[in-house]
Length: 295
Image 1: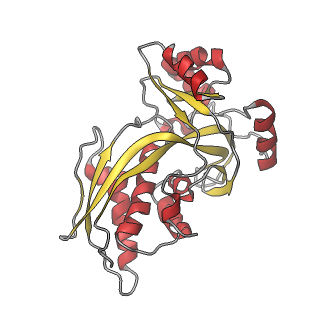
Image 2 (image 1 turned 135 degrees about the vertical axis):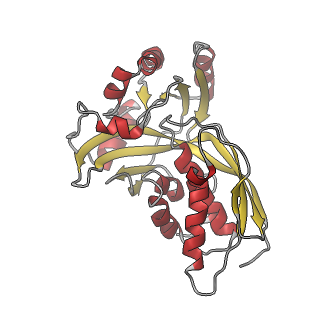
């Protein structure tokens, strides 16, 4: 292992938005088959990594509500170390992981998954583990269905349970995101008896043509189910709809709307009722750490 780099600081873990989310079926094991487009945005958590020589993997910052041994960053580090140590002649050491947390839990923004992906990318470099992008994506899938897209590193049309990814072009725009102040359980949302599970599959060209023509496409099949049970989400969707197509991301709770430029996004942001936390972010074409990996 090369020790030429002993720390990596200011490693971004960007949020994602689901520009649409269709549930197209269900597997025999209970996992839902879906189609979605993952859009990376310029807003998220920030992680810092520093090597340790005692072999320990430690999270050095507190994350309210998440014990260290349950944290996806710690689990990702342990998974990568185990995989690396199985390779002949490879021996990795420990690491301190510090997290500056901005993304809310249960927000549908992929915060924990993005943190795990950034951990895998950063430690693959810091430990000189030598895994390819595809190999890290396979490891990430063991941690959660949303982890691979952040390692994939660009906006993607996703199928399967979210792990079959195809690059897709998305609009260069800005988003206003509202956090309604509630936490939604992803598993509970997918278990809802009234959830639509038979939406007709679409093609990637359907999305590309639809988004180019109207700026929006499809729907989020989880949105009506979740909004019925969480009034703050329904209220945020209704308020944001005055500016365009308002949509919930993932299983919620955050909702968003696209704007053509920063000025129009800022104008809307200034009008958001003060009882909601809200922010604006530019669309990203690639993950900020995309260049650290080989294909």
